[in-house]
Amino acid sequence: SGPAPIDWTTADAHAVARDLDAMSASLSSGSDATAGATPAPLRLALFGASSLGRDVAARVSATPGVELALVFDNDVSKAGTFLAGARITAPDSAALDDVDLVLVSSMHGEAIARQVTALGHGHKLVRDADALGLQRV
View 1 (cartoon, rainbow, N blue to C red):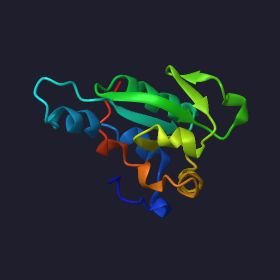
View 2: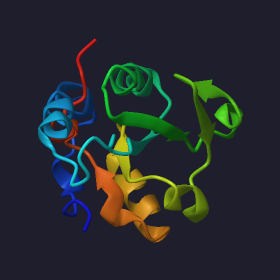
View 3: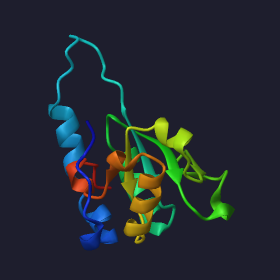
């Protein structure tokens, strides 16, 4: 099961940057049922390749157990470029299938929520980045 739906009427884009600290604690406190096995990294996509997205991407890169798999952005001029080693692409259902969570890193949270939900992946949306525990850099 995925995270609970988000009330985007109270969304604050800067909360993404402010709320990222809890993820590594959550990940490091988790246990793997297979002794000695290294758990697969959490495959995270950012939605937003703006300056806020760059800041969040740096935090993702510094967080053990989290892989920045993709960055989604609606600006076609960014498509095919990279942010923190992750390919920037337009969001589509197939690309969303390949990630565990989508962290909004844009001031356009409501529009992003509608877009991701319309693609059938609204259950993967995360706005409260502190709940994910990304490292501060």
